[in-house]
Length: 468
Image 1 (cartoon, rainbow, N blue to C red):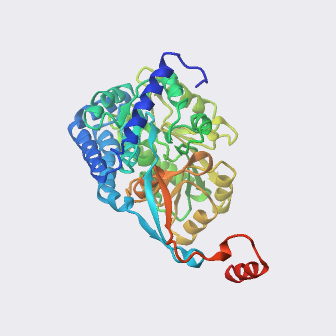
Image 2 (tube, rainbow, N blue to C red):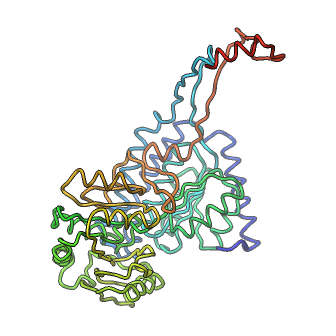
């Protein structure tokens, strides 16, 4: 992204924002009934356009139907259902305690919509990662501009064609386009920006938001480690790691990025991973209809380059076909720890395996790198799991599983440090698009003179006694 935009694009978005601000100023988005209608309409969009959306996701990413539906359509519907059920309670004013200093008084904390929000979604889960923040923004009473990813063009087209027919067109606008359009949007003043994507682009978004002091929610990524202790159930660990790694051909921000495995179980784990891959995807996993493909040639070349320059030994897979953009599930043992393979988020079906002598060494390895979006640990010891969680930092974590912490609709999901800022899902999403406004009400009597000048010694003495 650059700071220059086409002169014809910039005024168009300025007019667009003016229209949304005018809508917001009317107060039409504030009533709970309006918000409920939008959430219901969003559910109808997903239900009535399911087949078109699934087909579009398959066209863009080559995912099997079960995966396209489950990870994008079904996941979104469950989360919207939860928001629809609870948002009226979240929106209620909450009575606050005023304490002795303000007595007598009453106080409320009111959740107010921020205004006009921008949601920029990525290509890897092109429905889920657009619809779920959109639902949170609508539940909070905002107007919204949604920008689907141009790297999932079929899905973007379905959303742009049909979504405006379901939602209030004066309050929700879909903007298609690429870098130029996104840059022009970011030049506008929004009241909140919600971005899902890479850390590098997240920095661009945050810099643009800073020009207007616009708050942001950044759902980014990073290298999410998986620690496998010697006492883990290796069969279960292998199945769950392979499943979580290869959903969407590894193009998942919380996929296990690399393994830190205690020496004693490295060989057994690799054998179990190999047999699990064949059990899931057959004797030729690279052509399996149950394994997606890489989104485009640029990302295909990037992932292959990471493997080729990563050192170590390819012990499973390694095959690739650029014409179909398919990469076999690939395991690299003992990679070069200073290579790009171990520095960059892989975002593909490639899994480096690093030997460690102890759990302490694994913890040190995690803490030597930027804080990840997710961390996973497999162990039969609660004490080991607790120690790993207590001595590391990540956006979220799972014990004896991977990825599934994103599923519960009531739990906050988000990153920390370079893996993200802020959270959403459930109440956290509603709060991300709301301002919690404190309103304190005082009677006109009593009106103690000690508050007002001139500040005599007697008043000062009284103030000191009160503020002990």
